[in-house]
Length: 239
Image (cartoon, rainbow, N blue to C red):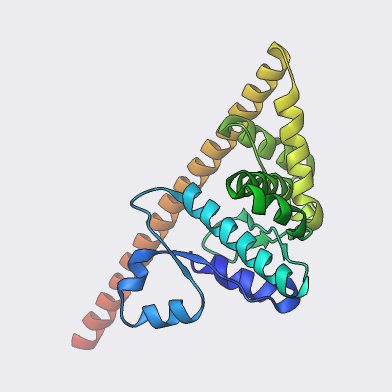
């Protein structure tokens, strides 16, 4: 998605220069390659599906860079977590939330990195994953996710009534409440919420289909009426 990099580039704090990952096939185009290279975009080989290795290599490079900087002038380096949460994804304008986490200071990892870089990279990776989870909506499965969405809709009636700054927190608390329940009552509640959501969607779909059918009938009737009026006008002129 081109929207994600654009939104991050516009909203990222402190005017820091960003580097993005992009599939390596984009670099084959002689027109786009100079732009990508000039923008500091990192090519990703999707065929290998080895994103974890790429992620580890990126963090290792960050730690190595921070290590060199520290040796020169003892400058503190940090890494900031961010994510994009899309509330409504439709053809019209989307409502999105871009939470930015507190910077992760890399300095505490530098000493361990000089002793064992692999272990340190894994520790930093785990820390970043943990911080990202705090910023995003996470569900163990789609049933619980749909149940939480239905609960939020029943309580607020409209997502627009949920303050944007509380949207992630509210949704995650609902997910945690539904995930933390035990026994048949919790399972029955989730099943009922999912069934209610499915029923609402089915009804909306039927209403939409009926409206579309009536619109088609009305359009056809108008076309027939216009043709008849045009035909009557031609008959009068010929007479």
